[in-house]
Length: 293
Image (tube, rainbow, N blue to C red; front, side, top):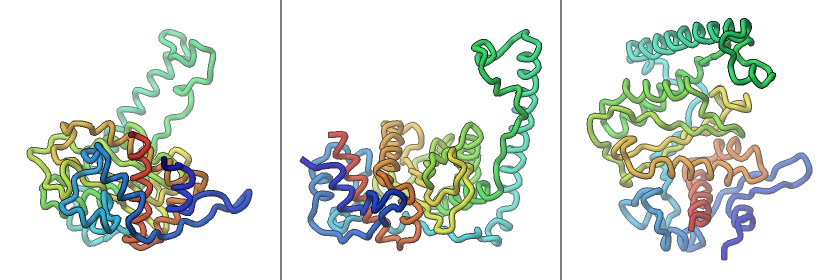
């Protein structure tokens, strides 16, 4: 039986050196190891995607592969943003319209809470009322640029004309609540609405992508810290693909598995090269799959 903590500490360098200093993640040398044993026996390859060649598993390059791990620069490409100015303008206008509607709704509910005509649940429970606080839903410029740039890279990679639709989908999801889960990690998802056809993914039915920010970026995470990694999945058949909820749960499990006592893990991972990052992510993913067995 694989011991979870020993496996993670051996493969990922997780754990604590002392009471206030986390051990650095260390690169993993691919070999015939526990990772391959788990993937060879698992019944959950539909969650990881089926590699086009088993040699990718032998090199510890599945489900994360170097061509789908992107090191993001400190500033996005201004030329590309200018050349797609119309799409970016549509995105900004949508965010502004949404925030204006939410502000009006917020203020109406605040009046109802103050007057007692239609109090919210918190008021009924004599708790602090969210609606009686000033409305403050931001959407940082850094996050807007990141969303636009991430979707641009993905849509160009697959040569599909879904840029505007996917940007709109991910923007809509982020307006609902931030996907920045904390500890430097964000799980961007639920954006593939309305795609007119299948996506030519490399590992059907799903490709796993990781965008790394060595300098960090403002994703308005739940812990209010910068994020250093954005995980995003691309489904062959969009959100109609079976099992997408289980895949997102697996991604959340991966985020916790990598940290495992080291809250700087994603920041450290973001400073590695793409192959090293793949080895670490894939070892952690194998252990996540093992826990499903």
